[in-house]
Length: 292
Image (cartoon, rainbow, N blue to C red):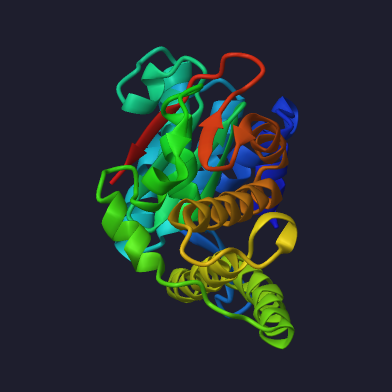
């Protein structure tokens, strides 16, 4: 409960409570906080110590704690927690005036970075980790070049050429009857619940498996659906790309909105989808975007 209290105190910058909790948690700096028989963890206690120190403006202590947290998470294979610790560490380095990472080069602090199967997304001072998905990769291409139109066929190809091959891989139009379409959508709803449960328990392997199935179902529905939910014309490669990419991006924004409501609203208002897609924010927003 102390670590959860620490998260809340740091989030609202309650300095008095942060100072009290820092003193209470410091003797446990080498421990992990778990609930029950280790069914849930808030991560290494040094993660919360780093957040508390940052809220108190103790930047050197915060950086040391968060660096330690990332290394501890790496040793346990806790990818989501490691990604969060590194994102918070980058924010601390920027705040104390030592832009030692690529994230700190972005004065706005907005980050969209993939490390393997995990994305670290930061916007307006809040950082969240997300599982990899095709729609997030599409968004990364658009955020990296605000205002530039990108063909949906290029996004299907991953933004790196090979468009013809990628379009061919979409295959012929599937013919889904109403019963099949309803079954697909019901399974997607079940997957949303299962993914939320897996995320809550930081079960990376299960999350990745469920996310792969979800992406495949979304692609199938997109290939069978045209404008206004109508069945798509046979043989139209550009239309296949449009429906596929639109579905992927909408799904990705929905996932972001659940984890980071403010960013989700921003993307819904700023992302244009169609045969050509673009990121067009009402005001200039700078992003640090990378994929590895």
